Image (cartoon, rainbow, N blue to C red):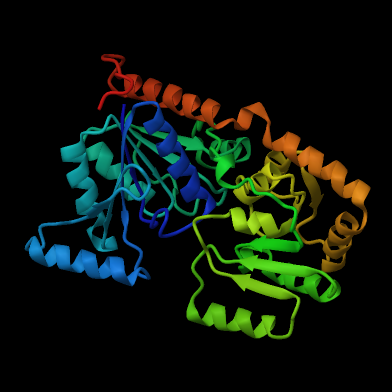
Length: 372
């Protein structure tokens, strides 16, 4: 099978978040099984050296070059100016000739429309229950299929958009995040933004001044956001801020407890699952798909619980070794749940994609697995 991934959100390793790692892991798993994969994404405007190389290549080509290819992820990834992504997708549809297009997040409806115009089946992967990026405005087409990151999102798709959306869990590469934790000493929040509960975590840090806290940037912070956050951290000597990095193992090596007090409706919460893979208990919001993801690998609180409750739950884990060890064992068991096995998830994707392709072709023809 030939799979073209496209999105208007920049991609691994230039940008890091759960939905991007889901797509990246899926493409990597497909390649291991012999399938041909490509990606077409915007270039990250913060990567100055890469931008200079892109500009030079565009000039040398007489501006005929749309996307600069690289193999940083193991599969060819074309990166282009955001306003050239549409033409880039059209070109890759013509030259790569994918059996199916996979899209998600920003620009997913426009990319799906381009695939449909080209007569290529397209799968839109929905990761949020607010349907921020997919609003169901595309006209019905046998070439279009939506899949949902969790049962929670799938139910929302049926209730709000009237669409049948089979579940495809995000595959999580646990080897990428497992880490030795003999020096773990921190309470960690990954992605210190309002939606992820940074205000709660900073208040918990005030209430627990004897504990170390680590904030890890993932979504790009604007200059104003960074200045505001650093101003607050100046009054909290027990809190440090770490820049984003593709390798998350050093973060989990330092993490004793992960906090995930999300204030929006999370579909999956990849970081909770990643933390569990190293036996790290998670204190998280009981919201959206988080209860499904976390299972018994931590403690769930109401998202509007006062910071004092978040502090009490965190301190109970840190101060009571028996409680911590029990939840650490459950975290490991949760990360080993068979429904979240990456091999099972990639098989599920192939099953969904092959059936969608057959239906889009009116039942005629077959997809050749592993065709290069």
